[in-house]
Length: 220
Figure 1 (cartoon, rainbow, N blue to C red):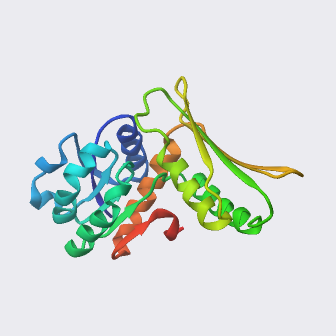
Figure 2: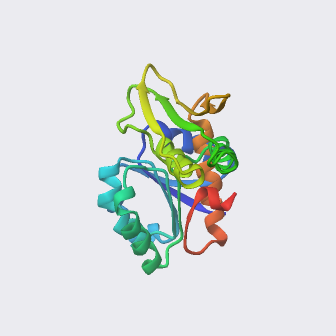
C-alpha cells in the first residue's frame, strides 16, 4: 500500500487526510514546506500537492527529484506546463495532474467533448459560468479554463467565462450552448470538497503501476 505526504494542509488537505484514513492509507506527514521533507522519507512516498500556484512553482523541482510519485491538484501553472512535465519525465517520477479531481467533473469534461463535437458548425454560442467560495484566489477557476479548452478544441468557438465568488460555495460549473433554436446546459455542482479528495486519493493509488505524466481524465 502506498504512503502519502501532503504538500499543503488547508481545507483540502484535511479532506484528503480523512479519505486516506478511511481507506487505511498511511499519511506520513502534512507539510506547509514540502522542500523541507527528508529526502529518504520522500523516496518512499507519494506527494499530493494542493497548495498555491506560487508554492507549486517553487516546489515542483524538489517534488520531481525526491518523491516516489506526485498527484498535483494545484492550478495556475499552465504557462510553465511543458517545463513541469519535462522535469518529472527527466526525473522518471510519475505525476498525475488535474484542474479538478472530482469524478463528476471529469464526467462533465467527457460530456462537453461529445456535445461540442456534435454541435460543431451548427451555430451554437458557448458560455461558461463558474461560482466558488469567497476564499478562492484564482479566477477563472482551473476547471473553467479546462472546460473552455475542450469547447474551443471540439466546437471551434472560444467561450466567455464569468466568475462569481459568494459565500462558501464549493464549486458550480455550467456550460451553456445557445443557438437561435434552443439551449443546451451542462452543469456540475459540488456539495463539498469531499469529491475532490476522493479523486486525488484514487489518483495516488494509480501511481503504483504508472509511468510518465498524465492528466487525471486520461486515466478514467
